[in-house]
Image (tube, rainbow, N blue to C red; front, side, top):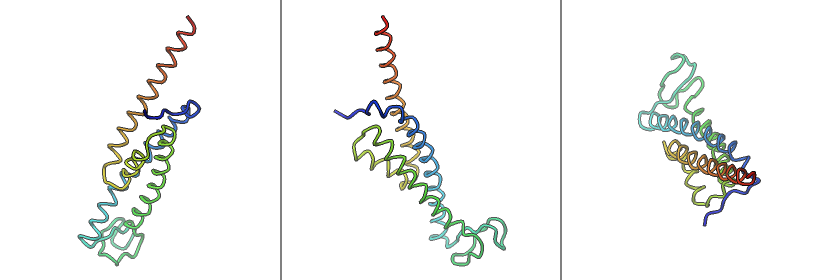
Length: 147
Protein backbone atom coordinates (compact mmCIF):
# COMPACT_ATOMS: atom_id res chain seq x y z
CA UNK A 1 0.00 0.00 0.00
CA UNK A 2 1.50 3.36 -0.99
CA UNK A 3 2.20 5.90 1.69
CA UNK A 4 0.02 8.98 1.97
CA UNK A 5 1.35 12.46 2.71
CA UNK A 6 1.54 13.40 6.36
CA UNK A 7 -1.35 15.65 7.46
CA UNK A 8 1.12 18.33 8.58
CA UNK A 9 2.62 18.42 5.06
CA UNK A 10 -0.66 18.87 3.17
CA UNK A 11 -0.61 22.71 3.27
CA UNK A 12 2.88 22.72 1.68
CA UNK A 13 1.93 20.56 -1.29
CA UNK A 14 0.28 23.25 -3.51
CA UNK A 15 3.35 25.50 -3.27
CA UNK A 16 5.68 22.59 -3.97
CA UNK A 17 3.54 21.66 -6.96
CA UNK A 18 3.70 25.22 -8.36
CA UNK A 19 7.49 25.28 -8.00
CA UNK A 20 7.70 21.91 -9.74
CA UNK A 21 5.44 23.02 -12.59
CA UNK A 22 7.34 26.27 -13.24
CA UNK A 23 10.76 24.66 -13.02
CA UNK A 24 9.60 21.78 -15.22
CA UNK A 25 8.49 24.07 -18.03
CA UNK A 26 11.56 26.32 -17.86
CA UNK A 27 13.93 23.34 -17.72
CA UNK A 28 12.13 21.69 -20.64
CA UNK A 29 12.35 24.82 -22.79
CA UNK A 30 16.05 25.26 -22.08
CA UNK A 31 16.66 21.57 -22.76
CA UNK A 32 15.08 21.97 -26.19
CA UNK A 33 17.21 25.07 -26.81
CA UNK A 34 20.24 23.08 -25.69
CA UNK A 35 19.42 20.30 -28.17
CA UNK A 36 19.25 22.84 -31.00
CA UNK A 37 22.51 24.39 -29.80
CA UNK A 38 24.28 21.01 -29.67
CA UNK A 39 23.14 20.19 -33.21
CA UNK A 40 24.34 23.59 -34.43
CA UNK A 41 27.65 23.22 -32.64
CA UNK A 42 28.60 19.63 -33.39
CA UNK A 43 26.82 18.87 -36.66
CA UNK A 44 26.96 22.20 -38.46
CA UNK A 45 30.02 23.61 -36.60
CA UNK A 46 28.31 26.91 -35.64
CA UNK A 47 27.75 28.72 -32.38
CA UNK A 48 25.35 31.50 -31.44
CA UNK A 49 26.90 34.89 -30.85
CA UNK A 50 25.05 37.79 -29.25
CA UNK A 51 25.99 41.41 -29.93
CA UNK A 52 29.04 40.76 -32.08
CA UNK A 53 30.29 42.33 -35.29
CA UNK A 54 27.85 40.17 -37.31
CA UNK A 55 24.76 41.73 -35.73
CA UNK A 56 22.62 41.33 -32.65
CA UNK A 57 22.25 37.54 -33.03
CA UNK A 58 24.43 35.59 -35.42
CA UNK A 59 25.60 32.10 -36.23
CA UNK A 60 29.38 32.12 -36.39
CA UNK A 61 31.84 29.29 -37.06
CA UNK A 62 32.84 27.32 -34.00
CA UNK A 63 35.76 28.72 -32.01
CA UNK A 64 35.39 32.16 -33.64
CA UNK A 65 32.97 33.77 -31.19
CA UNK A 66 34.17 37.28 -30.37
CA UNK A 67 31.17 38.61 -28.41
CA UNK A 68 28.79 37.00 -25.90
CA UNK A 69 28.62 33.23 -26.50
CA UNK A 70 24.91 32.47 -26.34
CA UNK A 71 25.57 28.75 -26.88
CA UNK A 72 27.50 28.53 -23.63
CA UNK A 73 24.90 30.66 -21.83
CA UNK A 74 22.11 28.25 -22.84
CA UNK A 75 24.15 25.36 -21.47
CA UNK A 76 24.78 27.11 -18.15
CA UNK A 77 21.19 28.33 -17.71
CA UNK A 78 19.81 24.85 -18.40
CA UNK A 79 22.23 23.41 -15.86
CA UNK A 80 21.14 25.78 -13.09
CA UNK A 81 17.45 25.35 -13.87
CA UNK A 82 17.96 21.59 -13.81
CA UNK A 83 19.31 21.98 -10.26
CA UNK A 84 16.14 23.91 -9.35
CA UNK A 85 14.07 21.24 -11.12
CA UNK A 86 15.73 18.50 -9.07
CA UNK A 87 15.08 20.44 -5.87
CA UNK A 88 11.41 20.93 -6.82
CA UNK A 89 11.15 17.25 -7.76
CA UNK A 90 12.68 16.19 -4.45
CA UNK A 91 10.43 18.52 -2.44
CA UNK A 92 7.23 17.33 -4.10
CA UNK A 93 8.36 13.70 -4.00
CA UNK A 94 9.15 13.85 -0.29
CA UNK A 95 5.89 15.64 0.61
CA UNK A 96 3.81 13.17 -1.41
CA UNK A 97 5.87 10.22 -0.05
CA UNK A 98 6.21 8.54 -3.44
CA UNK A 99 8.61 5.68 -4.20
CA UNK A 100 12.26 6.34 -5.08
CA UNK A 101 11.92 5.05 -8.67
CA UNK A 102 9.24 7.70 -9.17
CA UNK A 103 11.71 10.38 -8.06
CA UNK A 104 14.22 9.05 -10.61
CA UNK A 105 11.60 9.02 -13.38
CA UNK A 106 10.66 12.63 -12.70
CA UNK A 107 14.35 13.60 -12.51
CA UNK A 108 14.83 12.19 -16.02
CA UNK A 109 12.42 14.86 -17.24
CA UNK A 110 15.23 17.40 -17.14
CA UNK A 111 17.60 15.38 -19.32
CA UNK A 112 15.29 13.65 -21.84
CA UNK A 113 13.90 16.23 -24.30
CA UNK A 114 10.12 16.89 -24.00
CA UNK A 115 9.68 14.41 -21.12
CA UNK A 116 9.37 17.21 -18.55
CA UNK A 117 6.30 18.58 -20.36
CA UNK A 118 4.50 15.22 -20.27
CA UNK A 119 5.50 14.50 -16.68
CA UNK A 120 4.46 17.98 -15.54
CA UNK A 121 0.92 17.39 -16.80
CA UNK A 122 0.72 13.88 -15.35
CA UNK A 123 2.19 14.76 -11.95
CA UNK A 124 0.09 17.92 -11.60
CA UNK A 125 -3.09 16.02 -12.47
CA UNK A 126 -2.31 13.34 -9.90
CA UNK A 127 -1.40 15.76 -7.10
CA UNK A 128 -4.47 17.94 -7.77
CA UNK A 129 -6.70 14.86 -7.77
CA UNK A 130 -5.22 13.77 -4.45
CA UNK A 131 -5.78 17.24 -2.94
CA UNK A 132 -9.33 17.45 -4.32
CA UNK A 133 -10.14 13.98 -2.95
CA UNK A 134 -8.73 14.90 0.41
CA UNK A 135 -10.72 18.16 0.48
CA UNK A 136 -13.88 16.22 -0.37
CA UNK A 137 -13.19 13.77 2.47
CA UNK A 138 -12.58 16.62 4.92
CA UNK A 139 -15.78 18.41 3.79
CA UNK A 140 -17.83 15.22 4.16
CA UNK A 141 -16.39 14.57 7.62
CA UNK A 142 -17.10 18.17 8.69
CA UNK A 143 -20.69 18.00 7.38
CA UNK A 144 -21.22 14.68 9.16
CA UNK A 145 -19.86 16.08 12.42
CA UNK A 146 -22.25 19.05 12.26
CA UNK A 147 -25.33 16.83 11.83
